[in-house]
Amino acid sequence: MDPSGPPRAAESPPRAGSDGGLRAQAQAWTPGQKLEYLRSRNVGDCTRCKLAKTRTNIVFGVGDPNARVMFIGEAPGADEDRRGEPFVGAAGRRLTQWIERLGMKREQVYIANVLKCRPPGNRDPAAEEIEKCSPFLRAQVRAIRPAVIVALGRYAGMLLIGTDQDLKLAQMRNRRFTYDDAGAGLQIPLHVTYHPSYVIRREGELPPGQRNPADDTVMSDLERALRVLRS
Ligand code: URA
Image 1 (cartoon, rainbow, N blue to C red):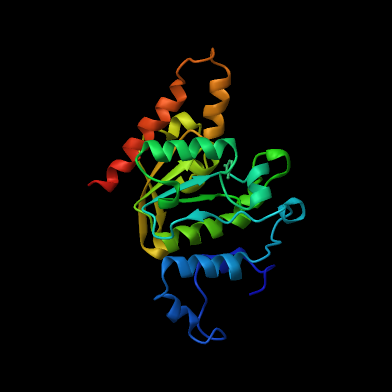
Image 2: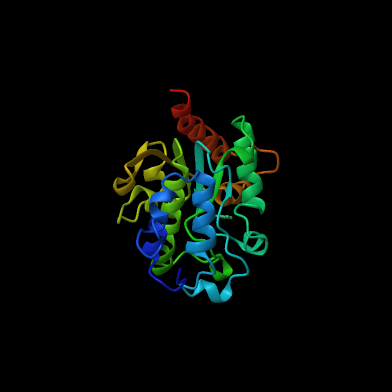
């Protein structure tokens, strides 16, 4: 697979023809096999956008390929870039705490980002980067087919809702959306909540020891999101 080819290549498993019916075989692959093909053959050593020049590692995603819950953040930070795994720095530790407070282990969910490479200085993702990289995220969702998706922060929320509007986080949280991938016949409940980095920043503004209302808000958002697992 040509790594400089169009991102559409990431949308689907291999096509019939020169791939000798591999696409048909891929229908029978496990989610783990699909993710591995996507990681190694479609994403490969991606050079589709300029982040390839500044990244240390591609941060593909981590967790259970059969997860029922998928958390999606914005883009890798410095720690993630160094280690090649999403949410392993301070924001990641907070996300792991949230997952554990929900009675799950980090290994039981799947964690990914809109962008697979770190924007220098943790700047906001550029439109072109989102356009080039998001097909990989969509392909991850197609492989995993989770029961619920939780978007962490504005960028992931807006992308997954599929809106062109510049929405504030407050306009997205406390509502149930649907992640739509008509081509794959997927309609997945989608909830948006605060990014852990925002919650940590808010904590820094509070007197020491004071309970962080943003943290409580996230927990109630997550509990609401996970209700679908019990229905
Ligand atoms: N912030 C994100 O959005 N993703 C990460 O992986 C780490 C920090």
